[in-house]
Image (tube, rainbow, N blue to C red; front, side):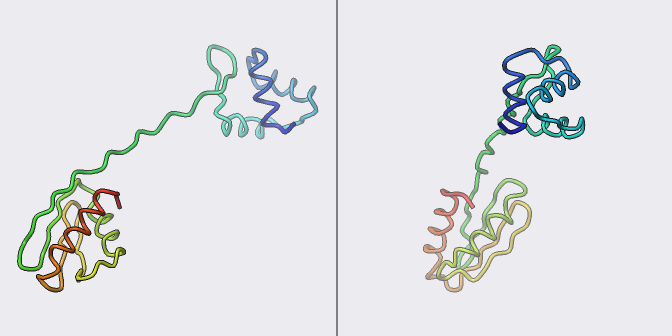
Length: 139
């Protein structure tokens, strides 16, 4: 059994009030970690002292970011303007440039606005559809 498994097994089977006790129990089980190694392992395993004893704490669940709202504005004859949440324009612009959409001349992205240049007005609808698909699946 490795050190991590031994730590988790010990703290689940009995109350372990401090690192000194845990280190002694680990030594009885054949492990001899230094105090600093033990501290690092406890941190890696998300083991914390709760109510006077070591317990494994579940790591907090990170909130799933919501997709930013994106508005598409046509600026004929050969431009689209996207408005999005602050900080997302460059991500969308880069993702769109990487799509290699036929008729797309390029993008210029600020913080919350992207100017999309279309080579010829006849490609405006195709480029808009590509932009809408990218918005649906995310950058």
